[in-house]
Length: 155
Image (cartoon, rainbow, N blue to C red; front, top):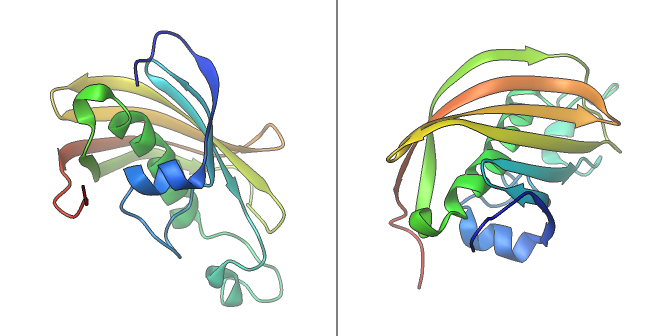
């Protein structure tokens, strides 16, 4: 896939599962909506059926902040592993900086994550990601990562 300019795409869960090693209950991106050079937008539909809502919190369900960050990181990882030179690779988180949570994410929300590449040198990089619900900032963070061969990938 060559990326010439920002464009609306529709990358579904089947393609996502071919690119990311995560599986239920830790696959936290449902669809990629936009993809461009150094930019991606992804979607996570948050439902009451998520297993973490049983204990976080039963009377007032809120998506754990660490899982909001994980969803953001998975969208960012898709942007990296879709690059032609990174096919068959996997990203590993090496750091999270400036993480801020602005509003709770609850059942029924659509979590929209946008990630932008800050730097990518060889197989080491950094992205800035934001997560929004109804155009309202839910979380933001800067992620550092390293890209390595995916030893578990089939085919």
